[in-house]
Amino acid sequence: MATSLIDDRRLRRLNDHEPRDGDHVLYWMQAAARTRSNHALEYAVQRANDLDLPLLVVFGLWDDYPSATARSFTFLAEGLADVATNLARRDIGFAVRHGEPLEVALDAASAAASVVVDRGYLVEARRWRTRLGRHLDVEAVEVDTNLVVPVDVVTDKRQYAARTIRPRIHEHLDDFTVELLTTSVDHAWEGSTDTIDVGDPARVVADLDCDTDVGPVDRLHGGEEQAAAVLRRFVEERLDGYSDGRNQPADMQVSYLSPYLHFGHLSPLDAVLAARGADAPTADVDDFVEELVVRRELSHNYCWFTDDHDSFSALPDWARTTLAEHRDDDREVTYTRGELVDAATHDRAWNAAQVELRETGYMHNYMRMYWGKQILRWTNTPEYGFRVTREINDRFLLDGRDPNSAVGVAWCYGLHDRAWQERPVFGKVRTMTRSGLERKFDVDAYVALVEELSGVEIAGE
Ligand SMILES: Cc1cc2nc3c(=O)[nH]c(=O)nc-3n(C[C@H](O)[C@H](O)[C@H](O)COP(=O)(O)OP(=O)(O)OC[C@H]3O[C@@H](n4cnc5c(N)ncnc54)[C@H](O)[C@@H]3O)c2cc1C
Image (cartoon, rainbow, N blue to C red):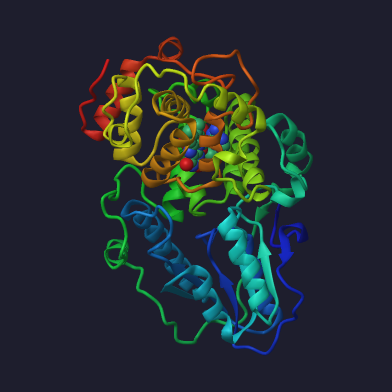
């Protein structure tokens, strides 16, 4: 089934205003930097056609974005180049402007008859949208397009585990797994567009005042065209066998879609449709959908309903209590932040994971769990370990600064998990050990793979 209609349940009004006389409809593109399967874009086109106006899309490029580096800005800029090309083909105006995104949007809205924005789930993104609605005296509508089932349709509360959110998501999943068709504009954008030229992503990044110590990577490049190619390769070559393969870091039988999902270069809806349409065993498809929809949307649920989602203080009570009880336990070894970043620990498997993250901007899920758990083991206090893990995660990973970053790190400290047998340092929080890793997969093969990918020789035992 395919439709150009936008389900009302994806829409939320940000104020009670009506459209007014204006030159255009404005789509403030912030979380969904793509032109395919973008419900916010298609809704904005339809609104523009209803009002007999052209559509302008605006994107705010902000040097001060927390934890943003030349690495993440390069990926972002590669995506903007695709958006520019694809919107021009559809006669839609596109402006990329320097500045805090909300300021850029408010400025561009001054002559707009109606404003549309894609939904953001982190607290800062939510505050921007609330302020947008309050500041404008024209209608403003937010559209949920980066989740398969909109976060507020699934439930009106924070969920405590995958088992509680899973049935709620599945209740609506088929309803929302509908291919989105594009709508043509009735009025081409012919106005002048005050915009940065995004045709050369390297030039765009060179003009930003950002952290250049973490540079671009070759392993993955941004943009919706790349996203479509990475998805196609995954579905054709690696989806068959995903259930077992995804826990074997040396096999890399995973999708590598997380950076594309993070920047909104790919709609999760397209990934579900592609997987379901593939010639692959049902168990593999179901396990992929479990990760992509249930686990990912559980993270969005946590951030949507938790204002302090980045804080240690938001962890479940039982986890904070048990970690506090073991705060002063002797550590076998401790490392500084610098030693961790340098991958200079005694543990070769951990060092390989850190090199994978630092040099390639990606890390395998199984290794992320081990990596995060060992930082808890090797730092002086759980609060410090939590902070350092998050900081390294967000600075080096292409998919960092995501709801999945908040939840992945917090999971290492007990979120969405239960109490386990009590151990030193961890208390009742689940541990992971090197011997467990050895039992699960071929650690030497993983280290060799990371050495090959990074060109870095990995030390340790
Ligand atoms: C300590 C730690 C930190 C993490 N940091 C991040 C992060 O910064 N950004 C990020 O996107 N993910 C993070 N994750 C979750 C997960 O590891 C990644 O989403 C996954 O490894 C991305 O690789 P992939 O796209 O190849 O995964 P695939 O196995 O191909 O999965 C497909 C998609 O499903 C979703 N998914 C997979 N595993 C999980 C999971 N455990 N939880 C939620 N969603 C999942 C992702 O959107 C992923 O792209 C973290 C996990 C941990 C334990």
